[in-house]
Length: 526
Image (cartoon, rainbow, N blue to C red):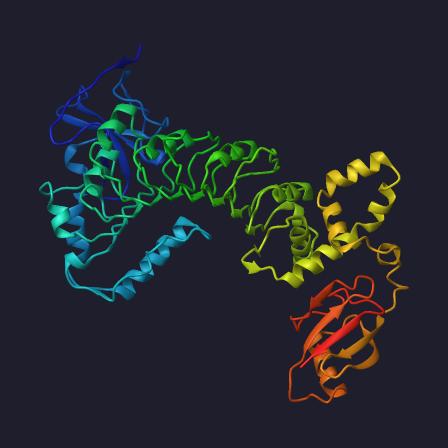
């Protein structure tokens, strides 16, 4: 039968993070004798499971329990490095003058490693050209510097660097939030903190109370906790330490389910980055809808396949949503987002887009979400929205016509196209000639239009190819109206819908792109 034993040692403690000469890191799980071997041994649970030999059992005796069957081993105390203090690391990193150009290159690598395409690491690009003394340091980067504690006298860090606003402590040897609090309580101006790739145990309730007595995180607004094996319950437990937090990045963790935060935490949260967590179910995302000030959610690569938003006033402040690299396969899921008041939407690499050109998918998204102002980083102009919405009416005009006399078809149509009735009220129904299916072979490649010179009232009727670029049309207009010294502004006014006027401001698009039809009027201004 396996026997559980424990041991003691000085200068090191259970739970402490350590590293060895080859860079491997682990957590101390045992300190003491390991018979029949002589002397004190350190039991390590290695971050890399292949680094160990067992799970904490040696010759039938359990000394500790590792996270993986092969991540545990014993080493001598002399072979481990318990790291350095934050004060020592700063002196080592910034003891000499630092040229900011070299530092900026390294910071760019860190940003890429965080993989946060929308929620930028605020501030880490505002480094002074030279840092000649510790008192001037406002941005401190200690990525992979083996920091394990604050170190020094009680106020040494505060006296050394009183003006730190942003600190990167990612990939170090910090093991608990008391150690982090020991650092941050001396930094009264700290607003941005990166603790990614540290194995930090989430604090228990009694530890939360003890840490909060230190007022260590009062100024913190932005925290990054990437790749830390945290669940959402761990995040909520830690969030009790950050009373004024506005932005949280927790990508690449083990978050699968979410819970609505109680009213004591995250009530001021503006943005949340959950990228590359295995959430999958949108019902979990809905649990965040009670956060009153949440404006931005990053759900890139989270396995979302369906979107269903209850009409219950959720996400009242949400403006920015990132849903690229997911499994969404139905346009109805996109229509669900019209229940929100989104201003920006990022949506690439989802199955629903397969088979659609970039231009077509953009039009469909714009038509289905009424409040969008930016899509995939590009502004949606008023003319683009009108064109997209009117094309949407025409695209589904035959289905709409067929459904008007059949209740079953009507119900199914409105379910699939929930905005269609509003679009008809806005623009009117499409005429049958606009949606009747016509063989592309019989469809004429020429359209007859009126060219109307607005300043003079002159009208010229021309037959033009649908494939003509606006750029070539502008050149033709210059010759016809004798305005070669001026670049004209072109717009199309639909004959069938006189209220629909679309600015043709992209000279590399075709007339067909702007849905120019026979009998339409092209307005020329100069």
